[in-house]
Length: 230
Image (cartoon, rainbow, N blue to C red; front, side, top):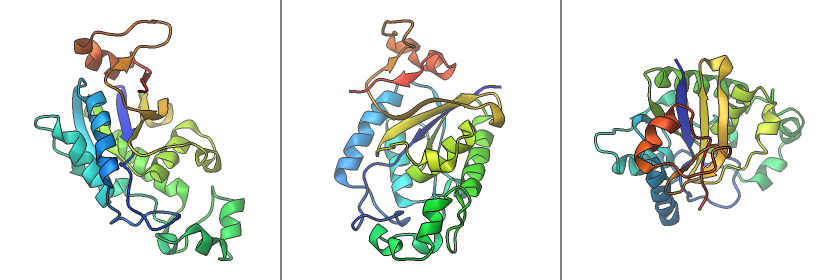
């Protein structure tokens, strides 16, 4: 059975300076909440079967905002969707980390680097992909709110590209990455870092806008390749 998953990055967060990875308690800014309502509008026409999120405060609040316009949709928190565990590096600024001896190892071999007191990118990506696929097997569209770093790790697992290459994908707050496929080893990316709009675009070879009432069924079955930008 084919699965369809929409990965959503949390809205803009509060942070102190240029940090390597946000602490779990980082909260959404007012502009972050506002941008998420655009994403909610994009998903409003779709028949969402499930909504899951990681345990961070920003992921939980993002999920609550997305669920607001969908009657009866209850967000579910999953520990397996926690952001990459960067251990002792969490919350530290890039300036502070560049002074550490481990920084050069991270820069040279990010695919195999073990964060001090944490995990490596492969382990994080594998646990997230397994968890997402298990949730999506129930059928319908699964919406999952994940932190950007974890989404990049998922992209690396799904596509087979090096984790170092996946870190180059720009995943701004309140954007979507689309995944679909028949099995974990056969998953495909339908779009990365897409901004929400008020409807959905058909594949470019169709060249026309769909009827809003038909959006959910066609997109969930793979008929739509991406959300349009506004």
